[in-house]
Image (cartoon, rainbow over all chains, first blue to last red; front, side, top):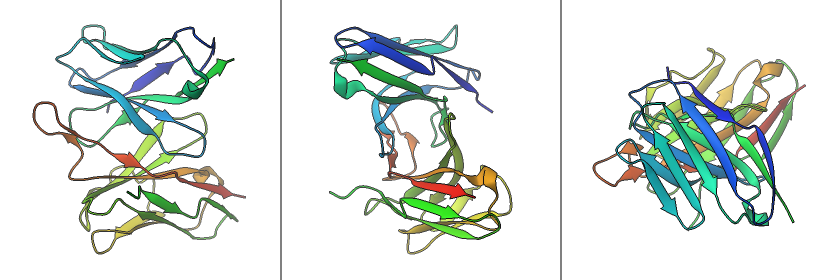
Length: 111
Length: 121
């Protein structure tokens, strides 16, 4: 099955700086890569996603890049704010309902 | 509108006891999923329901785990003879139809509940 690795496991950044989280996947058949944000006491929420036919996607302060050849994708958060503090999960899918998740990155934004 | 709800939010039980975890999906959502989130791990798929049927039970870790869904709505995940390794957060998600890509520009998003934290002593 699909194996998704996520790094780093924890990330501390100064408010206003950028944060980058990287994921690799094992199955070249995966074609859909969502990112989820999980705040304390809540379930994960989809924040951005990317399809395999796209190399980059941006939505305000967050962006995701995909390198199909290397089988890795990254989440970039610019101008970080305290409300960005959360656990972020990457996932990979072959386009169906089954999502394979990374282990998560705990992001702390220092004021 | 109301999101996915789960109950209880926390459950502490003794090893060997049975537990039932409940999920109320978003009204009208036909697809429902259960995941397990262990400490320091990502979400692990357990089971997928479409309506009252479970076409994919491949993630259930053992025959001590079972789930049912009635009326195409509420689902219950049952763990029999709980073990300490069952301690985790159990998350439920629902989607309007079967989750996944559905044509250009469409993904049937899975909406997650807040989870049930299960602790087996």
